[in-house]
Length: 313
Image (cartoon, helix red, strand yellow):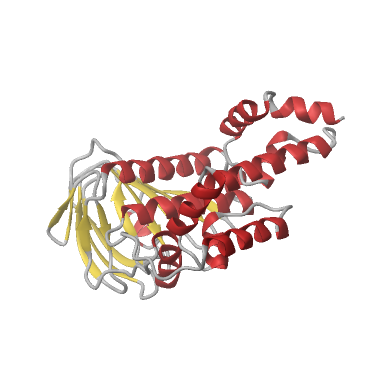
């Protein structure tokens, strides 16, 4: 079940024992009142962390054998930290190895984020999205992704953190959590090295698109997401995107988004406004941000979703 929690700390020992991804020992290296906060967001297969602490620290972390957290600064104005003696600046990320250990030195007012997948899930998602199975590196390393890809990841990460702070009940909605997870994983894999597509021999275009439409028909009353579709069809994201562009004039993600929008409109048309709300229907169709949903809905259908719901009465 998706969920999110936020915990604040005034004791470094309590902070270090709160990490599930690693056994951690923390030493504060300056005088002052220690304060820290961690927000943990559990989706279906992805775990998201957002953290902050007030004072500079030195830490030693021993990672779990089944996950490889990817860690990065979330504040572009903060000074660099150090990971195993290597400088980590804003715009860079640390890719950890399974079961690895590292020492980190962090500055005061450090803000950081992380994303964690099991090695099997990382391989499965990347196989679909870029045509090759990515694996955690044999040694922990620091990389600097393409700035546009990193900016996209940070924007999504910050938006999810905002939802955890202001609307945790929305994040707990399974379909919203699924949609957010899909976008975050896509943004994460775009940042990782080795994501150049290595296409294997794929089924013929007509067969793939026929099965694509059959899958949409079989799931007409529920949201579909691109990674699930590609996995079921046995093709990569790039292949399906090329086929859809040729035959539909748009990518599969846009096609599936339009489908979800029309499903939401139908649900609003059939709903009883005394028993449901626009927010409930938007969440049921995987739309987490009501404001963006309402704007997109009006651009697409020429009226606000609330008007459609009222007319349904």
